[in-house]
Amino acid sequence: MNALSTSPLFSHKYALSIAALSAAGLLITVFLMQYWGGMAPCSLCVTQRWPHGVALVLGIVAILPITAPPLRRILLAAIAIAFAITAGIGGYHAGVEYGWFAGPTACSGTISSDTVEDLKRQLMAQPVIRCDEVAWSLFGISLAGYNFLISIALAIFCAISSLAGAERGRR
Image 1: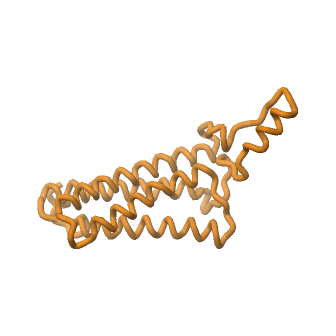
Image 2 (image 1 turned 180 degrees about the vertical axis):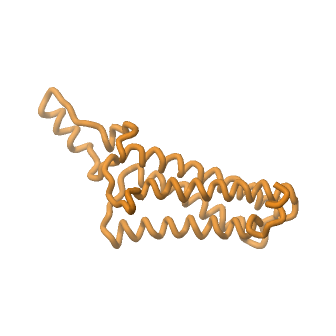
Image 3 (image 1 turned 45 degrees about the horizontal axis):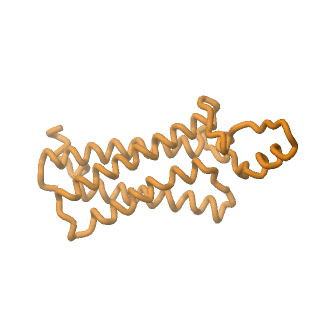
């Protein structure tokens, strides 16, 4: 860890800037795809956005000049946790899309009923966008898969940066 603690790549301010810009970039991308590109998100897609929002807000607060260095390290660790959470949700969502896991019944379950009224109620309660269908992919990887890959890399980077700065004690 000694070499990492002296590397400017893992300084708290640099890592916080990367984290905030990455979270903002991911959110801007999905909102553009939704509102400009017409790709409506499923409920798992929306759930994956919240930790990015948390990471963005925490990153902005941590970058402010009035934020003390020990608090920056704590916020960086919290951002790493937020990225790990969205990576977990993204991994689960990708698994649902590829049929590896059963998805939430609210957005990927089957409809079965004994009565017409019950069937009608279930159909009306079903979301328009299903969680188990890949809406967009590149090189065979869905958006949820990319969220997993990018977010896990950011979580590891932020965690290492938080620990490296803690060892040095002055970032």
